[in-house]
Length: 419
Image: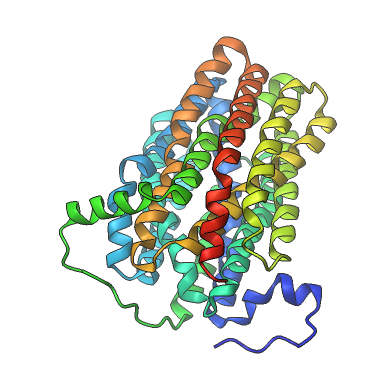
């Protein structure tokens, strides 16, 4: 049950107003710890792969294997999430993710690890995440009682993700330098315990599920027809897909920049990734302090253009600390675009189809990404990592222009939602 906010709320009360809900407060605290561990494992995994292979292409293959199932399973997962208990789904996915981390720790610690192990375990985690992401995105509405606080809760989700993005890479860079990658995997396994406990302590109202016996194929068709028959939903999915395919692959190439462009070590890799997190964290604070959802459509347009422009500037930079500053703007604009898109999308869709729409959003964000990772790895081998990033940034700028042409239709849909 929520508590009343003061009649004259402070800035912090406005930014963190969703923490007044007990269930969301539990989720926020447990997930923050878990996400720090997740980012530690992400950094350690990329560093391990590049240390073993010295190949940008293999980095792309590993990223592909961890993300492709969001594309393959996405529509079916959406039907599953709409039909079953989201709360229980999340408990299962967190337990399975913990097991994956401990297996990685064991293989690396025993010096048994090989690239094929990493690819198989990445595929396993990818299957888990293909279920976890749409379930977690849809679960926000089950934790926040007032619909007008939905945008704030989504912004705070992004806040904890990017707070972890700052802490995780920085800590992992130090740990890798001292004790190797295996300890990062071990700490990530332990970090799932708080979020599992938090989920078990929640009291979630039973959700009324419409048409639970509906044929799967029919439910799939219904979800596609609803999503792609709506121009506002369609343009968000389109822009997210372009950003994921051509823009997000810059993260995959970060080890190449850290070692080959800037001549650094694991700590420099941590600085680059941490800078993205700092910018993204500032972006989420900015969004969380705003109470109007209707204004977000223009922010999506501006942020997507800025994201592309800053990627181009990063590709052109040859100085580590200038690149760190640029990446902070990359992180800021990326988070404004993605968090605003998520908020607007969740504000205009029907709850009975939420899982299916959010699974398509996850496909556009994470399912398309593996193709971008493969493309980026292949291009980086041919034309170099900087030129690959520049091309991706130019495509993102073009995508923002196409989105801007239809943005007025999205704004009307948000206004019609009567927030």
